Image (cartoon, rainbow, N blue to C red):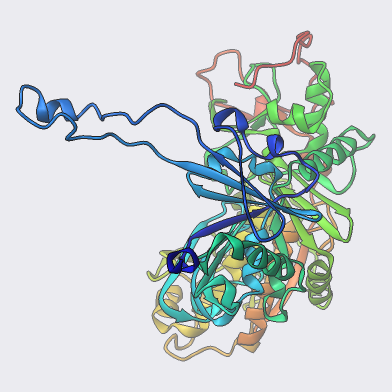
Amino acid sequence: MMREHQTKKERLTIYLVKDAKLRDEQIVKTDRTKPVVNLKISSGSASLYVKDGPPPKIPEWTTFLVENQDVPEHLFLGSRSEAAVLIFRDADVAFALTFGMGFHLLNLDLMERDFGLRVTLNSIAPDKLRSLDKASYEANPLNTRNQSPKDADIFDLHIDTEMDMVYALTGASTEPMFGEHVTGRDALTIMPDARLDDLPKILAAALARYKAKMPERFSWVDNVNRVREPDTLEILDLMLTDLLQADPPGENVWLGEPEIVDWEAQTGYSFDQRARTARHPTLQLSQLIDHMADHGVKPSAESFKDQAVHVNDANYESIKRWSAYRCVYAELPMGGKTFILRNGAWHSVSDDFVSRIDITLSSLEIDKQDMPVYKHPSEGAYNESVAHDTAGYELLDKKNISFGGSYDKIEFCDLVRDGHELIHVKFYRSSATLSHLFAQGSVSAETFVKHQDFRVKLNEKLPAGIKLIDPLVRPAAEKYRVVYAIATVKTLPAELPFFSKVTLKNAVMTLRALGFGVALAKIDVDPEFLKTASYKPADAAFAPSSAAMASPAKRKGRGAPPHSPPPAH
């Protein structure tokens, strides 16, 4: 009788089923299990599904060892991976617990996302964390796991509350029923001292903590989240399709590169690789929609996933290819949140977070000194033109300084105006390029005031009129102003991509803390430049020339469009 009541630590992996009305056959892949076994439990109901499969298999490598050997007949017994799912139901709630490889038997789309994470956030001591999995929402997101051999505060695990999304967490449990530690992502993983009859109380405690308000110390977790719900993703793609098919398309959707591109190595963009297809210097949504219409394709989220966008080199060859869906940037308000599509992934952003960022940027100075109009093939050409043709500007573009540390080479700025305004220039192409611009300005300014070795190397590259008198002396940051100059047709900063706003806000806070003035400048773009296109010469060996450049108004030689959609090469 004693053994019947003994408890031991059990590893429990718990999922919350989205809809308790779903049948077991919808939740569990019952075609891969043995017949259900109903278990006795203190309350509710418990249905056990065990993986069905072939008998244990002897590995092939055993032949190498025992062939023609005198060994016992059953020396190797073979192995198989056991798997089981327990469906627990009580009132209007259903849980799925997996054992072994049981998660393979679950329809995971029917499980609540982040159930385990939210329970964990409400069940751990904030200064006793052990592991944190996070992802940045940069253009090229980094997924990382930070671990500590001893209890640590969440900030000891190097979390940026405005730039990182937490998707898994392990820490010391504050709920005795959960055991010593708790881990959460979609599933909740705990190791309590428990028997099967203890399960209803444990699951009730988990549900209560899931529904509880997020602790204030973790409220930032809801700032930004990756959308993974299939139903929500379908709705968002339908809303995106409505925007794309509007005439004209909605102002809150546009086209941009999903990653940072080497502008010096490319000559433009095309939507297929035919010789008669235009190569555009910038990505514009209207041009893509016109191209698709020429081929009988209606713009939609689905058709954009099939449509290619090519980056072309000087010989009109594709050096990089994305789907058009990856190039779409959209911001859609819905249900107290803003949903953002970037780099092919939807994110939800709390309206409170959006409001805080916008309020911070509302105090950012807008530079009143007009800069020359942008109508150049590259930012480098623009910077050279400004420095050569406009009084008061000095060129520093491409004068990188090798410094080591976290940044191998640092570009101080692109232009210096009147000896004290450090101007960073960028043509508005995408969220990724703008975020890079804002971070670059912050890093270079901070390095300038903090590191005399950097100033010594910088002074060697500064024009005579603006050299530092003594680079060993820390400069007075308040005598300088960092200017982010963006060539765009959009209103600044209101129409910046949200994630770029976050990077800008952080850069502004850093620069102000160092003592620098900070301003945002808009560079007007020549409308004719945006219409310019080039075409592949008849002889593919020829590089593009000025003769190949023409405005669509002057050159209509696209030929008759094909009757079927272009292949996504």
